[in-house]
Image 1 (cartoon, rainbow, N blue to C red):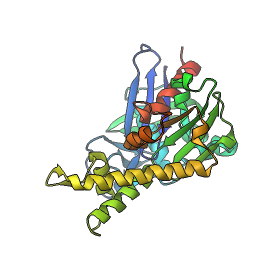
Image 2: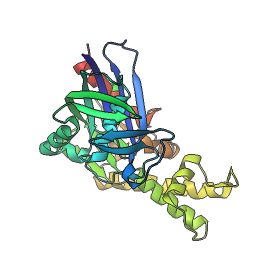
Image 3: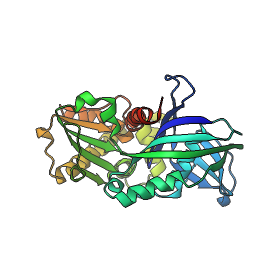
Length: 324
């Protein structure tokens, strides 16, 4: 038998997993990351390219990763894409053609699901399954069983990574993810259910605002979502292979508008950030507006790798509970 301990943040935009084989050294930690998207090969065959995987599960074939075309827009994660992404990521820790692989994991859970015990149980059971899982990834067969799952709140990993930020303090954690903005107000490291909130104001909202600004810049000529996303990634709209400097101001305005949207939601939940000891921003979308946050909020804190804060922090919980 081989035992693996993992923490998983199966986000709407990206899948991030941290973990290791318990037979390896404590430093032998592996990180797996890819886009949470899928393409059903019944729609037409394509070859696997880039950070993608060809996956066969329950008799059907998919491409998972950056080549995917379908992503999740559901607040809940009890959907097939998240299960497929989770299982695909787990195989990256295993040896193919082996049996008796046992997985114990801590799983990040949306704040909206966290409020309901029945929804938590449903999400946990949905990912765990009730038997061994057989899956083929890039032509190699894998077999494993998820023996136990612990559920923790999305965005909560930073508490375990940097507990000194929270000790004796009132701290708002703002998790800017793919679809959602999650807010959790911690008072001396404790967050009650009534002190959590979730809004649809994540990466998708930022891309929408970038797209509107670029259409305005191009005098009404259309910009696709993919083009807007690339512009955000490149820090400007490219023209003849180079960044068009005039487009940068429009991109900056989109980022500023997004920051204002985030702050409007926080204020809408009756939170005055000026009365807090710290405002901590995590999640991958945070990286796009970190300069604005640092400028506007003097008592803000952004981890260097904010997109990994949840999975990295929850790994500390996982190894403490399941490790040796």
